[in-house]
Length: 263
Length: 280
Image 1 (cartoon, rainbow over the protein chains, first blue to last red):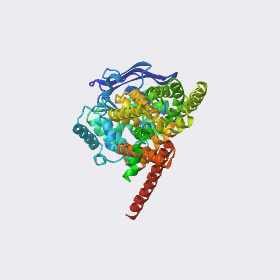
Image 2 (image 1 turned 120 degrees about the horizontal axis):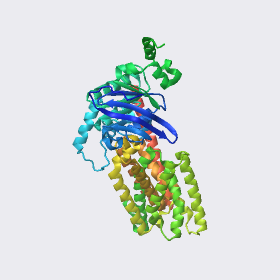
Image 3 (image 1 turned 180 degrees about the vertical axis):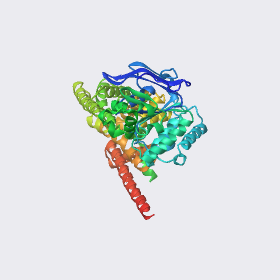
Image 4 (image 1 turned 60 degrees about the horizontal axis):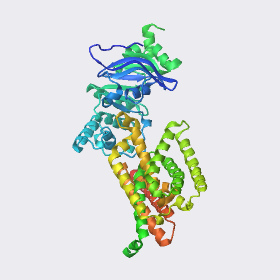
């Protein structure tokens, strides 16, 4: 799909132009084009192995592109590392470590310079502010072992907030948390988004995306669609991503199908 | 009582041994909590066994085990790190191959080069044979390990907890990975004379495991681990002196007794809190 200008009045923050990533001979992303404006809340959907995490890794500057370009404010992701915060999938984190909530948030303020530039008061102030935003200030000294899945996710989001980055990447933010916790996290993301931050969330749930997100990026190695969820999430796009299982995934797809007379 | 405690200090060799035991115990138990929480026990064991060929060649060339410490540790750490990163047979398998093949190579070299080494001392430690220069080297290694951990603590913790998050934040994760491998290797090689190749793992992981059972947070577990590690090594030395027991195994057994006590205490505490919860 071609690059889509959603809001021509705003300057695009993230531009992917023919972005390709290969692992050896295996393509993970092929000619992906999109452009995300500042302050947007974007769902990144697609099947397992569809390239969601690969795209996030590329945006975070963790993996190089094979072809094309991917820029943040016109620069290579490696050059603007402080602009991006990444909340990885929970199973990529080593939960063996018995850390306090405060220690996890403080990681967001850790720099290459071992002699921290922030004073202790400044650090505490930033930690308290981030925890207040996610509603976990009272858990500051609690061990993360004693938190629920949803609370852990909020702690990781608080760590990202403490970094004060413009862009938040949340990989599988809703996995392994119950529906109530998912709603809490979504509410939290809405609040963060109101502060002007650009948020990309990889998710498997393609239901009601138009109620939750400004835009959706549909990936299945290539970009199947990008734009307003109410417009682009058609049965054809769902089928392009998930194959013949699309009817199992989303009633919305049928709604579109019937409404648009494509049947 | 004090007289009994001071008795070993009448002998120079015991003073040297006690200082070395303390330094080794502190060094290993300081790195232990990182090691067990990163599931690197097998890697550490492989590091200890991979020292054998280097020791064989080093002793053949006239160096002591302590003198070989730092260069051997760096070589082993980098080599292991590279092999694990660049093979696609799986980390455990790669470590297993290195572990056994290097150990075998060490024995073959000892035989081929006709190196005069007491294998029992090498495998289980012979702390009573440490020289003054050995003491200086081991204490220097302890100071080095402490300094590096203090300076890089936050970065190492971030990298160990969430390597991807640390990389996105701009930390040099390759450097941190090798830094920890080198520190671990230094602590292991530096402690070989104290507890030997086979038992060095016990002093690395047992005090840390006992500390983890009794503490809630990582920073406190490091302090408690160091306390247990040093108590184990010093008590082991006293037992060895008064009961004429081998020093390395004595230290390991004291560490194991501490672990068993910590395990029982943890169980009792959990039962107690469960009972309190049920009553309330």
